[in-house]
Length: 535
Image 1 (tube, one colour):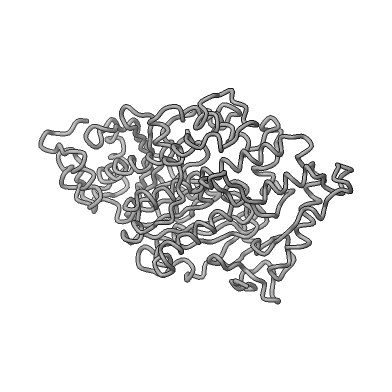
Image 2 (cartoon, one colour; image 1 turned 45 degrees about the vertical axis):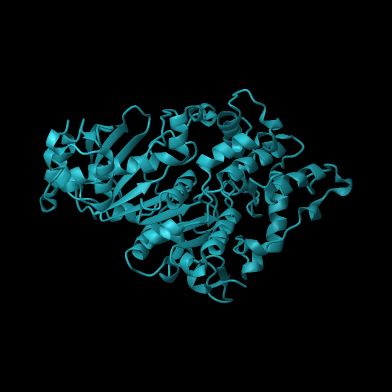
């Protein structure tokens, strides 16, 4: 559908109108000025199909499909709208509830190397997104990979050799898609969203950080789970660890992983006041793996670690820096060394990935496609100090670790960060040092008015592990952004659910640097038995 000449607007005028909610009158000529009061279910169902082939912006994007999807489980019925920016691989999908829209937008971040449409994930996305009938939006990250779950092609990340796809993936795609999403919401409901929020985990958490730092006016509230803001340090640490575990003598077999895990728990488990298999105070866990050294340093069996294996553990848990200190990483926490939701998640080689680790697969793709441009490059020989110029270029697009959140503060927007203490993809130490750097840059008062960080004890990457991993952060940040107290004052709890959805473990949600400390009495599975402590 083309616009009538009387309704044609420039790109800058359209974007300004979207930001300030005046687009309704400008779109009247193309059927976009619907009466919100008339948005009964049947009307919205009928309106859904009329969006097909609609042109967006100044003919810059076009709708390809629009279909009503029936309600299922906790998901309400919605109009699923797919659109694409013309001349680009950047695609977007909006799910627009046909009943009870709450007037708000929740933009969902993707993950990994993207390539598929970001969508609601019940394992970590906030339940209120569906229960409160948000309009949702996600993108494919700037390109399509239709077999994204297939090893090994997905990890090659060959999209990064295309300049536009690289820009969309690293920092631009969500920002340049958002106005078209708002225009579609206007056309469907006859009104702009009253509030716009962003939630993402892992690389979606990175995108949340990008939005907060580079495009602070886009959203009213941001939830950054497992936020890969220090993405350059992350990939360099991935490569460092992958080199160590790929050496047969350097990796730890199952028995040695358990030996290490038990030794760590013996020293650090009760630092939070209770023996429960969860290290809630990892900052106080000063474990030295050399206590497990085999006599003479050689590998003499499963009751000790060789010097090479100790070197692997130290590569995982100690800090890394390039010679110019331009790229750094703080290392990972001890804990869950023998768990599939701990070190087994990203660090240890897996048969399903051809004997590679996820850290190795992701870092290989990053190095070959983003840095060297050579798909046959031997990543075991990679030295970041020899590629500093190229890494600086990529970092300029990709890095999201700028502590200056003054733009977000000026906009009045709020952000919440969350990280599992046993995450072996995005280090919780990185999230902590980012938060500390924001306090140093902006001061405590401005930081407290803009940002809060929470660490989940015993939780792996985005979810999973022995600790509780469920909490509705979008509800918490929207309450804060809409005039309520910050999440740290909402008395929120982390919950672990069993396979039937029953709560089996809770902990208080403690604002960093506090952690849940057992009070000495009461059920160790009950949040009421804990207090948030910094001691």
